[in-house]
Figure 1 (cartoon, rainbow, N blue to C red):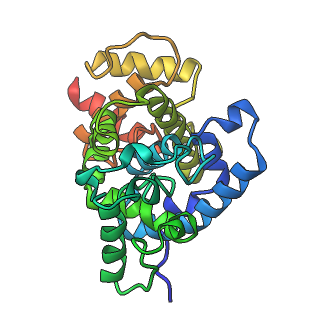
Figure 2: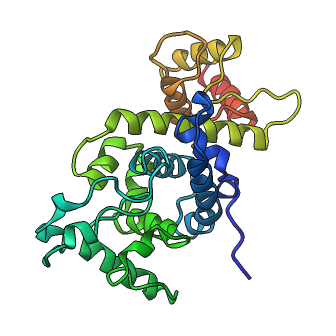
Length: 281
């Protein structure tokens, strides 16, 4: 029997992937993109759950990087020929034609002979039969192997640790070697965080109970910002917009109060904050 998915991971859907890549906002997604996100949404959840890519921050960073690396889920194979990788010994490309043969594939754009070899060995070490990707590199665009390649890269580079720190630049350096595409990665991350926060708020919100999260706005957010400012956790503008600064202040509050740190101001956080305020007087 397959292991049950962790609650938030079970909510990975084509809509969440489309929103991470900005398609919900733009309304423009080609049929190929729809097919790609459907395949990913089907294959990723059990793998993400198995390798602990399962907290709001980890999921947001993981999906944001996939969105960028795959050109907003348009391509699971690098557009370029791969000729630029020819002779790259650091990638294990030691034979003529290796650059083109082992060009970037999967949403994570796994590149180089040595990575195709290591991916094969890693999956097989888990007692799962898979193709020899070094011998058949084109198979890395097929499912479920395209999804396996993503979690392999994330797991073996220990990117959950950097995601827990909300370290976008650190993750980008590991994946890209620099800061290439950082602005787009940041935009995808922001959209993923907004979408995940709304999912969480919907899941544990109750009728008549206010749940504030990224993307919320209005008087309730403004009131929260003022209260957070009074306890020196919020240092931004009192504008009634629940953006990154407000979310970070709530996360700091939750950490201080030994609550689940998810950046969502729901019933548990609200009650603990009231008690905290009373004790501080």
